[in-house]
Image: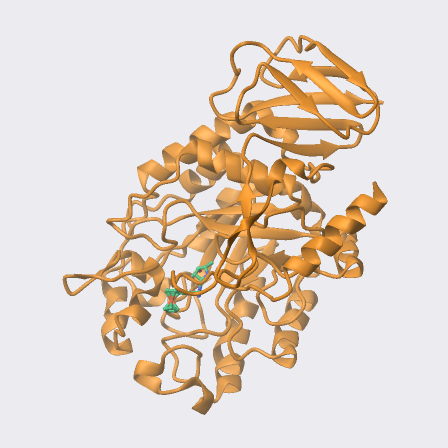
Length: 466
Ligand code: H79
């Protein structure tokens, strides 16, 4: 087993040489690896960090991208702007003076923190990560540091993060804040806005950090009770020393608060590229931030909702590889989470009600053959063989237990390489826990399955092992 794991680790390390931080949406560019591999020592350190215990068990969280960009919702001056909705200011090169005026129109009277937190709970999500400030620079909280915030600059005048704090605390959902520490298109010295303020390398970036990003980070760390984490993003212009100023502040003010992997220095865990799922098991602690359609911030005409079957597959796939799934919704300018995304999340939540024990706190697959294999006959643009994903089944583990998630229902299911003796096999969907017929010789297990799959999503078999 140990040799197998080391072999797999080396193989993945070789395959994933380069770092892949952000998704590259230009179709013509070569694919990048989904995640940077940690050294075995770093992976072990991540796994043994008591601070990340809740996160390692949580497995599934709700990401919320909400801000002024929900007003244009993908359309600027009659033009549909391609790409992700929260990037509209950048993609349409909207001058600060113009974009700022959206604040006067932002009045999300239908916002209801209780409903959002309840949705996360019904969906089976254990944490909620919301944009406290995205790259456009607008703060979704009451800030003394900048008037460009939801309380001081909008007719709404309420602080939704305060309301969410209460609603999440009531339900035991970990509240986490996304904060864009480097890009700030509203500030002359923040990274990213070259159309108003010229090239980034001419800016006094430390002035921006000192006068906005760091003091606002202090505000979110001190005004909203205990946070699960701060989720930093796109570390342009960040250096180890600059990152260290943030980490130091987080550790001083909230020692239990996690720092994600996109600050610019070492975080408590790593992120894959946006929407990128690794091909194999990845050791350590990591998370896939992902969209439920094709945008993060609301776009009125993006209706490309992933169906519940795809979300369940991705959730199981990620957990079986050792990661967490942070799945995004983009509420409208009225404060409403689009109904199609609500419907999908609730369906997945119903699946988790039955099958959650195979997800929460579960570890990665001890196998590997189920993920698929490299197809040497097909080459990507770097000349590397293409990984052909298999989707029939996945496995997750707990001490003394193995969970087999089946997506393509066979009559008989054969599993090679089972360590230990199976003492019982049953479907999680069966309240009577009726034993399934099986035979086991050496490491080979053959199970007889009922004619019909018990779940239209994934059906999970629990195997108890001795
Ligand atoms: O918050 C979400 C994104 O806004 C943020 N990360 C997730 C969680 C993110 N920031 N940058 N990126 C992701 C990479 C963005 C790349 C692109 Fe583009 C933005 C591709 C198309 C629009 C920048 C502008 C690169 C090409 C055009």
